[in-house]
Image: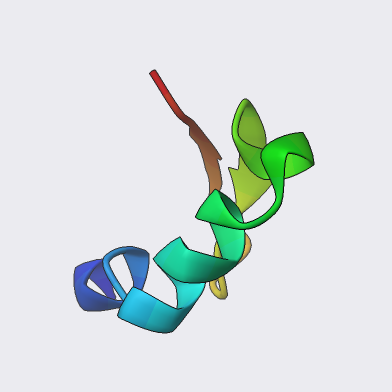
Length: 35
C-alpha cells in the first residue's frame, strides 16, 4: 500500500500539476498534503 504513495508516475503527475501540490488523493483514496 505504502509503495503506491511513492509511485514515480503518481509523483510526476502531482509535480506536473501545481493545483495538486497542496492537496491530493492517491490511488487508495488517501489524502496527502505536500509541505
